[in-house]
Length: 446
Image (cartoon, rainbow, N blue to C red; front, side, top):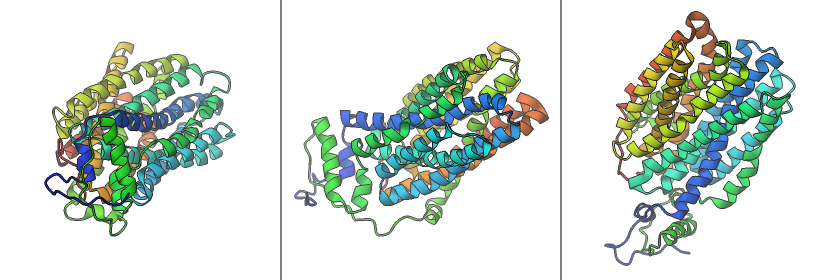
């Protein structure tokens, strides 16, 4: 359908304003659920490797250095995937890139089940990382661009909560499947599911209205808005035309004068939270194993700690629209720092479980708040690029974190290792002070 002229400027709204006036509808639920399943599958893949590595240490007689490289090579792929994926999302569409990422990492994970040695596994984990890294910033951008302003932060935190579902699934598979004979191969085989799910994403999820308008695809944009309006029982109104995007975005635009402060702060938050999270949780089953617990008990305790993520996300989703983005993120990072320090000092099973569960809940709640903030700080034309670049910079920390754990453990045990993670949370907390507070504010277009 052609662009509808605004007959009455007083009642004319842009398509994004028409979306922002809507309540949470069934269509929002379908978008959140559809994107969330992809998010959970991403988490399942990332989580599975930590359990698989604990098994391969025995089966392949892996050294600490080899384990670190297998964990880190995936994050090298994620760093590239996040930056390139975000850029592609602003050029060819959020939904297209989302589906492509699921296909890439699903096939690579499934192929990992056939790996016969460290070299092949390293290559496949790198390819898996390319898909994993691109998916998360693209999915959060897509959901944030459809969510109504008043609940946008909460909706994105709920999207992030699917990470807990995926990680619980990984812990369950790790507990039930990985200890079996060739169980790690079956665990990798289960990871092919995202490749199949890519077809659902490609056909079932809408493309971003903001992206479609910027590309001059006004008929598709209008159809997408009306789909959500019909779900809410709201009558459509005339739309104010939005100019098409004059040129594709470039990474250097993230550092233009009006954006450089928020870019620097955002990258610092992503770096700190990635270093602490992946350093702690990817090594957690192996650290528990090294503390004297059996492989089955290590996986069982990791599952308990992982389940604590769910109330953490629920609390963050509640507070982010009550307190705002910055206060919520700062609080969750502060508690995470304290819990990481306490975990390093824990000398009993009860202390390990309590500190681990608090760390799990508040660390993942902080992730939810960060994913809500990230797409908001950039305009539509570079939202995917900005989110992807921040995620990519954070992945540098997730590459370094697994590599740093063996020397930290050798130098000072759990106390030093988790003390460093606490400091990383502190860095992220300080950087958050320099981010804008955008609660109840519409996403900017330019």
